[in-house]
Length: 152
Image (cartoon, rainbow, N blue to C red; front, side, top):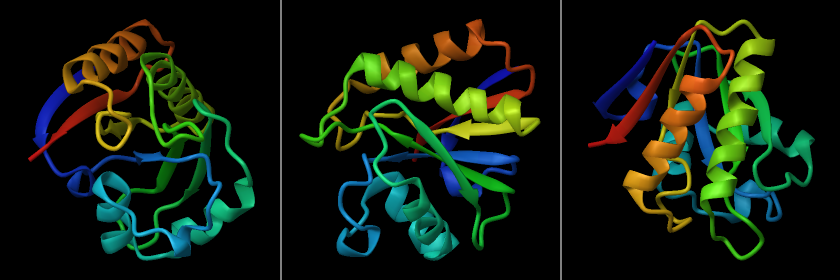
């Protein structure tokens, strides 16, 4: 089932949340994460980002799974939503959503919450990002609950 809500991604009671991340080019501790990543870092602590180091370079549209740190969820699915110019695109948003859903299926997650991938720093229009994410979810083989969280 697909749900749309207004709220904060880190407050969702789901198996996994999706973190709209970058290519992992710069060590996390050199960055001051904003938006989704900043909210996750403030609430989850640094452990998920330390685990993310193991991923090495992430190509745009790919995903990597870590623990959730201090969050209520089981895991965080980090998606590389930005290219090397720190921009996103509709194709990257689509590939990130596909990659995140693949990990959700692979790990038997019954519920996943998505931010509007690529709509912050990445510059993708919020309406466009939401339409892409919902279309990919609707056409996927993921059978659990998916929530798109519009930040409030």
